[in-house]
Image (tube, rainbow, N blue to C red; front, side, top):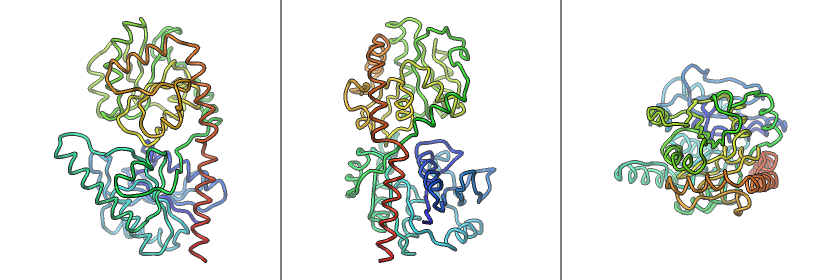
Length: 387
């Protein structure tokens, strides 16, 4: 089959949607299918290229709105040339990631006009916009409009978690099921072994230092600042404990300016090094406001790092009880601190919870399983069109 994945952004931009798109596209390419990814252009990168996995990447010119987080396609000659390559040999099936980007609306309309079977996969479980009330209300209105347009043209929707499927009901959309976000546990373990980094040594910490880790973009909605606010209470209960927030984002400079004792912000790290940090940590904590199905939660489970996180997105499907991890009742710093302290003080619980979370992951949330379901969906859709 000739498969096409639409994603507003793509690698080397590192985020949940980008990694989902790459991993699913890669498995399809490895299964012998022709694969294309269509995304917005990035400075310094070619408009088209074929990567090491045989994935053809087509980048369309875009305006980087909201600091690049919300690209809007830009008309012009370069876009016309890229589209010519894309539609010269129309895909057999398309998967559009998320319903609210302008590029997603455009992709849905193009698929409908050209009679190409397609589906949309949702990655969110809450409204995108934060900030003052007028901004939030405008964002909500836009999301409903975009969802209505996409659903009008492409009525087949899936979610990367059950929570995403339920969230779609806010827009009058009934999802057909899940195409779960996932990881490959064996591949992650191999990457950890290749990293050869001791994070406690790198940060100048003693080998026995209790270590709590957050990995991801340092954004207000992700909860990194909440974990930093919880650190004094954690250190009062567990002297010597440290928190590492690995990643970059607009809040990193703000948190670094605090010069808070035992709060480390090393910035963005190579993927293998980030995985090694999860492997070496005592607790992974992410008090996020909203997730579809967090990549780092899945990675922590795969590497048997005990998890403390909010009951958002797919976390409730992975952490099915207190013997699999801790789901926070709220995002207050004192709640986060209490959960982290309880985890640090109970090594037996950490061992049990980490093992159970990994077993849950291996049973349901691997790329092998997600790719198999996606290819079955694509095959069924193509056969239905031909018939």
